[in-house]
Length: 232
Ligand SMILES: Nc1ncnc2c1ncn2[C@@H]1O[C@H](COP(=O)(O)OP(=O)(O)OP(=O)(O)O)[C@@H](O)[C@H]1O
Image 1 (spheres, rainbow, N blue to C red):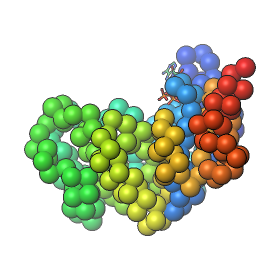
Image 2: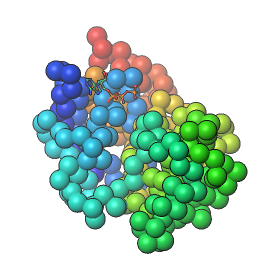
Image 3: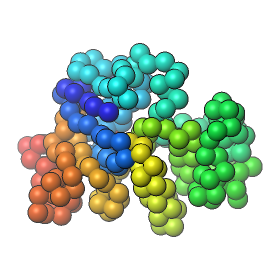
């Protein structure tokens, strides 16, 4: 997938302002940046949920805004707030999605790997934040997507669940998917990323391998240098 000179104007100002980066298959691309940097807006343009005001976005060689059902079925999406229906149970929700894909999904594997069974029959609104995250991640990866956009997938997870999620994301990328993951955790980015993107004030201030982006410093130090410099 590729973002080129993307602009998105919201509330009368460009919240994404000329962002350019790409992500490849079989890789995890982590997108970092301060609150309000434009990460979610950019990702929603890639998901086909927002329409760019300028520049271009391409996902699996298509324009996601105009793409049809066949394209969307190949794209996994985990929204920042989970985006799950509140009154349904995880079991019902995932069974429904499984049927949409004719029962060819990773339902059994993901239920086991994300340990969903203890709360499979509890309505979503009664789940803990971390449990909801795990259900949302299962929903995003259920249909073996070729590309998945995961907005802070491990936010609020306990360390064990985080470890499981990281292993799952690595396996999913190793199977050939392109994963684009937003995070605020340097540890997570260092552990997961094949490629890093740092956004600030709607633009990309660094992109490359972790070694390229860190440029001899720690990622944390480099992040503060880049975002402070861009703010000045
Ligand atoms: N519909 C809207 N109208 C006006 N402003 C908006 C709208 N949606 C988002 N914004 C603004 O756009 C900016 C970018 O928001 P976005 O959610 O993309 O940031 P983010 O990098 O994902 O932040 P976070 O790390 O907090 O999730 C923010 O300043 C936000 O207030």
